[in-house]
Length: 294
Picture (tube, rainbow, N blue to C red):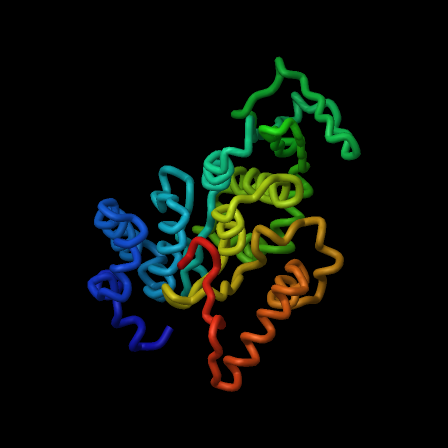
């Protein structure tokens, strides 16, 4: 962060209409309380050393998703990493967005302790447990499960072993690999494990609302400023890139991974916009924003 950036605080930026007006537009009368929580978060711990514009941008994404950034609630977090601030959607936040869509008749996530685990058939998705021994407070965890049923009747059970989650975290989170304290994967492993199973399962088998697509797109991403719609995954990859894509993603940059997971049309549009920007030109329609972040 430059010397000029360190002299600018979250509070001073939010006194400017450029930064305050978008929160008022999105949140209405709730904006003052939400802005106060951003200022408080920006002055505490390692976030106090992060680029204030990235803090505000992360908070704005959460505001567009109508998710509070209060740590005690667990819906969304603003996390410092490498002098920047990134938005981390909690598993409660993902569940909340799924419920809002009105497409889900049932959703359930839980830890599975070793004493309760009997078997899991990866082909059928059948998870067999000893209900009498199921104990969420048992620290001896075998894995993490997530179940959903759509209003239309389709249902899916997913189960990841703890070993599988750890391999996923080591591959996709530099913070976890280095044991960096103060980061979700290190401090709240169980919550991040559940979130990973939930996000990947919904992405593969669920119905994703526009809000959910936006959340998965910007989860774990840094936005350089409140108007920046190009996520930068400085600690790893986005939630919408799944564990099952590991082999084909190996050795690729974040940009290559992202472009590999979107449609050919969207990829072409992105490449076209990048070319226009590099030539210093701007054509009509080139500044379209991601749904939910207008």
